[in-house]
Image 1 (tube, rainbow, N blue to C red):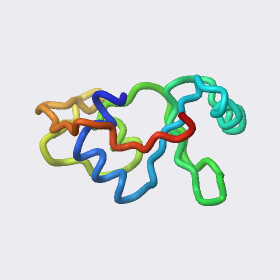
Image 2: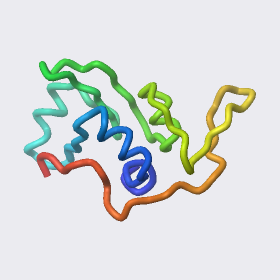
Image 3: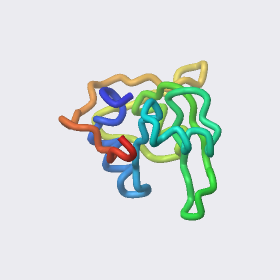
Image 4: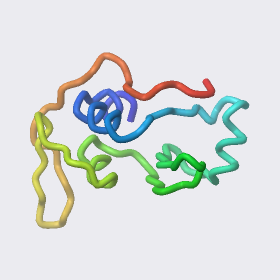
Length: 109
């Protein structure tokens, strides 16, 4: 996800405007307490956590830029246009602009 979704310029702009994005690498001992506290058993897992530490939304599994924005109920237009297929799935129809680095800040590395 870091190479495709988290490096997408539009995704980064939208998420940075609404959230304080952070990533915790649960392969390291320091983050294992967090993994246990938030009951993360499948990777990748994206948690939307409020200021009190309560989980507001849990997204499990790989997400494309379009599917991540859809699951977060956020607008995603620009260069990565999506179209609604008959089965309700969103499909990217144009190349996406990429940043060189992931927009998410490393935490507990």
